Amino acid sequence: MAHLDVSEPEPPCASDGVWLSCIACGERFAPFEEVRYTCDCGGLLEVRYADLPTWDAFEGRGVWRYADALPFDIGVSLPEGATPLHDVPRLEREVGVDRLRVKHEGMNPTGSFKDRGMTVGVRVAQEVGVDRLACASTGNTSAALAAYGARAGLETLVLLPQGKVAAGKVAQAACHGARILEVDGNFDTCLDIVQALAARGEVYLLNSLNPFRLEGQKTIGLEILEQFRAEEGTYPDRIVLPVGNAGNTAALYKCFRELVAAGALDDDELPALTGVQAEGAAPVVEAIEDGLEETRRWEDVETKATAIRIGNPVNAPKALPGIRETGGTAVAVTDEAIRSTQRALAEEGVGVEPASAASVAGLRKLRERGVVSADERVVCLTTGHLLKDPDAAVEAGTEPEPVPGTTEGVLERL
Ligand SMILES: Cc1ncc(COP(=O)(O)O)c(C=O)c1O
Ligand SMILES: [Zn+2]
Image 1: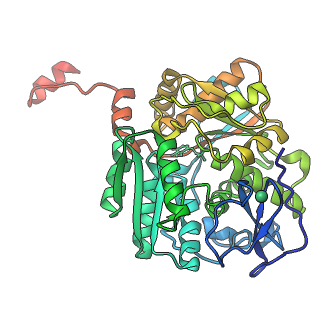
Image 2 (image 1 turned 90 degrees about the horizontal axis):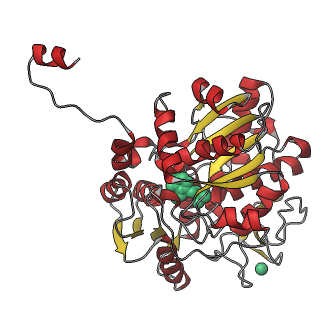
Image 3 (image 1 turned 90 degrees about the vertical axis):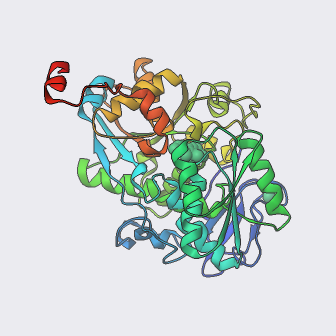
């Protein structure tokens, strides 16, 4: 099994103490001299550093507060990160855990966590000197790529599964000026195609297969730990998150391992990484439940939570060990549970898109099953903003009532 040992002392071919390492065979590569997404053996790459920082190295706000844990001091920034860690007292009581906080990544510049990865990824694109950026997307990656690409003055190309992307996300990609290709196929087909384009040198790939994206996203973990410790006096026992390509799961695990290697976190302080998928797209849940080394590709996937409508999670080899080694688990929830939880979060003022509500829906299910105990302190990650998917929001919300255009008429209805 792939194991993220991040305590390698010897940089092989590092520029400024940064290199890429294959998680399968250990082969190392210089980070910016050539464009490379995977190892020749087919293994996933991850970014390694000669020096890993401890807490007192961090200063400033947002993603770039953590520059000492990233390959650059600053990137193309809008700026991103520094998202709220909400209290949700009614849900906390209803779910029945000691503490429940919601880390709302929908409060990033383009309304999802993808901005954290893109600020770093687009900086790397500038470093390697490419001019056309591309991604396959269930929507949010395309919105973030379009915005950050536009900011950097680079051409952007996005491949979307036709008819399966929420309206807000397509609108963002369009208005930020991306070239949008609507593919007759699902997300996994889009990713196959854009990987083939990248292999031919046509585009620079900014999906989470690109290991630099995950470097930006690992700052979610750094922020959660710092915020929770400052406000609760301890670290959370568990972090629950929606899983699509499993990029965030991999990024959080890498964050934890690097902190442990730096001596900034004890092994027994690792929050249990707990992934949630929709029942109609749950290859990671299947792999965890059946003890598989790898996920099986699901050809037919379906869920109203279109952001996580993914059957072949590319980061599974990095994420499965993270779930297992932190004592976490994975669980699937119905679209109906996702919708009612989206509404419950909204009724506490926290507006999230359907995929995001999956995290809290999953926590509720695990609590009911007794997998999560009543004394746990939990952070649920909500990954995207309510307005990303206006159609789902309307469906989950109250019905507008037509009334006459007079005060008397309105009073009568009340
Ligand atoms: C709102 C939202 N939540 C969750 C995910 C899944 O994230 P990951 O691929 O890191 O598992 C995505 C990815 O597209 C997303 O847009
Ligand atoms: Zn390899």
